[in-house]
Amino acid sequence: MKRRPAVAGTFYPAELDKLNKLVDLLCGEEPTQKIKAKAILVPHAGLIYSGKTACAVYKRVYIPERIVLLGPNHTGYGTEISVYPGEAWETPYGDVFIDQELKEEVLKYTYAEPDESAHLYEHSLEVQLPFLFRYAEHPFRILPIILGYLDYDRARDFGRFLGSILQNRDALIVISSDMSHYIPAEEAQKKDEILISAMERLATDELYLKRIQYNITMCGFIPAVVGIEASKVLGARQGILIDYTNSGEVTGDYDRVVAYAGMVFV
Image 1 (cartoon, rainbow, N blue to C red):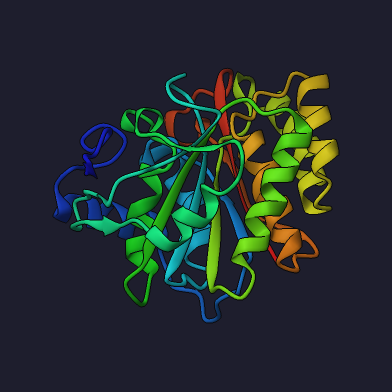
Image 2 (image 1 turned 180 degrees about the vertical axis):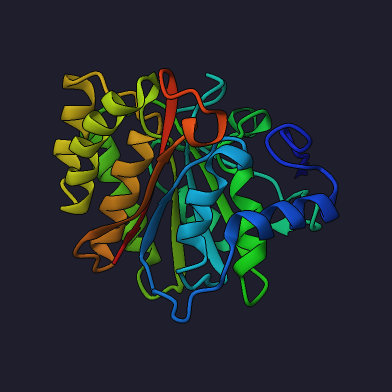
């Protein structure tokens, strides 16, 4: 079983030549050194809106042969921890294969289930693939996991479980999330700074609580809790903000933006 692209031609160009040109334009110059990150946080809007922020992160980190993709569930389909059960994802670059060994390990977690439906129309993980192909120095495998609404204890517990099975494996955790949605840019930045501060300190309880307390519309806060907790097991000590921007910088409309953050956890 292979997943077909759901948002090729809308969130990014379906034609490989056009996609490569867009990614080259967004990514600009190459950095001189790469960071060995445990996890990264990257946005998932259409590439013309959030791709520059995503690439600011991807081009600075080493891409290993194992990638765990954690994204929020925008469609409502599937289970609360949906692990893609198939063999590969189709992309404009060719097929990228699922890490079967890692999949079987993750499915040992009590609440993780093999589920295709959460992945069929979900864009948050698919839009990461152009950047992974752009910067991976070797062939890589992915393990896509879509997360529904988990209470804090379960999100933390699953993150720690994920971290435990990634120990002694060369892997990168990709946390897919946009930040505040459809509010003025200035308000978005003030709200997002609260959550970014918590993530810089790896304070997942604070991230979870304040996201709800202040009604901050960060869609991937569950994947962030899971990914940060896993990175802590792997030895991460801090989160570093690489880039922060919003859709207004492309559209010119700063009254109703979606905001984007790029971070590394090391």
